[in-house]
Image (cartoon, rainbow, N blue to C red; front, side):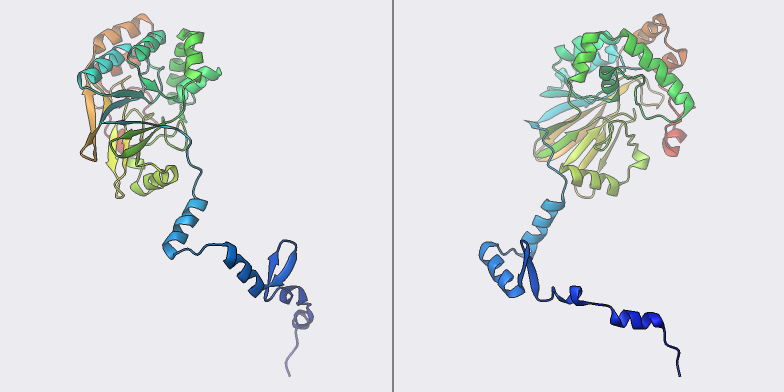
Length: 334
């Protein structure tokens, strides 16, 4: 004789009529109708899709909203740069170099201020060169009157020097310049040849996200591009240029900055040249020389930190190093 579990009896006696009442029926508005009747009615007004068409429809439905940013171009050759950091000497050299190379358009990915001297010298140069600019975290903060640059640093030493740069730029930028910054878009799309490219400051996800080469694996970048429905994207913010062609054929480029060297012991700065090469996207990281000694002298006259000046003169970063991942930090001098 076996013991009976009272719970078994309760489960056998449970009323299952609500579960069985819907069998063979379909919900149509607020009433139930026979399933066969419902299928007949929907077949008359619906459409039949192949498995491939159905898969495409599902992907379209579940995908992100289409970015309303208008596409500029098409172009055959463009120059893209980031991080001016008040370096008007570097910006002047870039405009001259880009013109000599016959580019059709010049784009800046933001961070006009910080690090260097006399920010009000930047705006006239951008206007003169017809530079198409987007907001970086600096422009967003300055235009909004925020207390810090929202650079994304977490280390106290990084934030100490970031605060010096931001307060200097904020106090030396005219109200008109700040208002102009606030009117800049936060992203652009361009077509180079047959490729549609997204231009952002930090990443497609966040204006101050750091995309370093060693910490941006291909699968992650592929996901970002799938979400954005682009053939590639260009960013800056880290200060270190890199370029990766993904297995899908897409392209991701960190264009670097022209405000300070790329932490490689060279005084040149970097910008990116994009060119249509018979349907293939050509990407070149251009080393740009400029009067770095004149910049260093002006920084000293403005009483900016000597560590900033040392970076300009040696090509090695002396500040904002703690944010670097292990591989990028290993390549540093300090």
